[in-house]
Length: 338
Image (cartoon, rainbow, N blue to C red):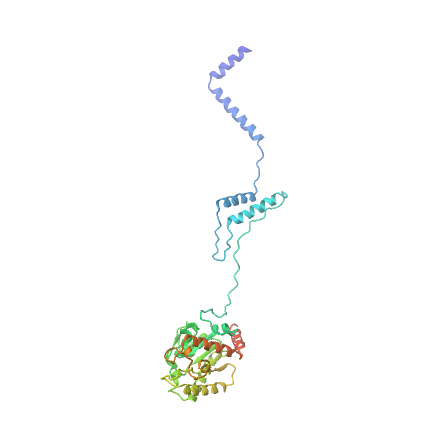
């Protein structure tokens, strides 16, 4: 037997093929044995992958980029990851059947639809102490001469509401055009284009030598009626001619008051709640001299400074509060919005 073993060993190792076969068989046997005794592969849930990804995001301080603009939330991915990891850990420690909370998604705030008929927002210098001042001023359209143009020049109304120009008068207003966004238009077409619920007409300083007080007053009434025919639901305020400084070269305040007296009577004779007379003269005159107050004079004794326009608007808005202007403006906009 011993001799047999010695002969087998010499034969086996004397031929290089047999040791190679033996090694391959051994490796194959070890591989099969290891595969049969290995631990079963653990199934990794999708939640664990989520947590692992979030841990990585938290450690590297990666923040999520949103596809929204200024309305996107400012919560970073690291903060969201930390809160989600904590929630997931607490949840898994309770029961194996508890589902991990889903990662909250960032949502874009829902914007309210814009009011198609809301009046545009304009930048202007606010005036008046009436609680309705802003309501009036947003809608106020000025029609008139260089004195009326000061409302826009000093920033109390936007140019879109300005139908006033230097040297414009009752007798020559047909020569003027205004482009408020729809191309050049005459005074009446421009007033119709704006279709405002509130107009203020201030014309007359350039008409003192062209009309008698009564002729002037009736022409002003015709202008108001023409605008009302084009904008039937509008409220139209006809302002009196403003005073001049004492000793002014152009005219006297006695003449201006005579024109204003006729204008007031003719406008009030209409008996309309929509066409109103406003005594601008008395708002700006010095009660002692009955001339333009020195703190409202623009330098030439004829035109006005910025504080004068603030004073006019303050008095105008207080006056409108005593009328049906608010209700009429609201009715106009309700009709226009249909």
